[in-house]
Image (tube, rainbow, N blue to C red; front, side, top):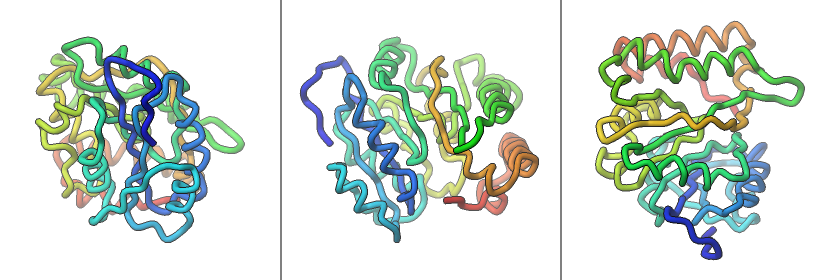
Length: 251
């Protein structure tokens, strides 16, 4: 959806990778369509949904890119190639963002030494908020790069994940080759490692709300153990293909 009724120094393209997200997509799209100021464009990059995902997007007036390959990295890369904005913002289909998202991104990237960023993710569900897990994920943004990549931490590395609504300058994204399409998991963390070589990554002091559906399925202890285990193994260089076996798809 292209918006031309508001001018900002930077045009923000919002890309939503989807695969069978009918249960939550409509709510996310309504949230994004209420942005003030609006995004330059919003579209869905679909990886072959078999449910009503595409129909929901089209009914909301959101263009859909039917991706030729599988995997979130492939979808986000194809979305980035189709985008016309100066800034790329990747929003998961189960994540709700603040109304002033575009302004927050614009303010963050107005600093010339900053190339990208993300937000504090608060994991919520129908009956509860996962405060402890959300707090740990917040801390992980800082302690993971400090522990595993200290030389990059001092240069501005912050480790971001998909539910943190990651954004970056389009020019920098293209310069570092975008997401690694071969990675089945940890693609955002990998992109952070490439982005920081061009400038700093900021964690914006605002909250986005992400679904707790994995915790509902796995349970508190299993979910947090998996998060810790995968993060540690990734930090010491274990391949993403091996890590993928512990991180089953949940819809």
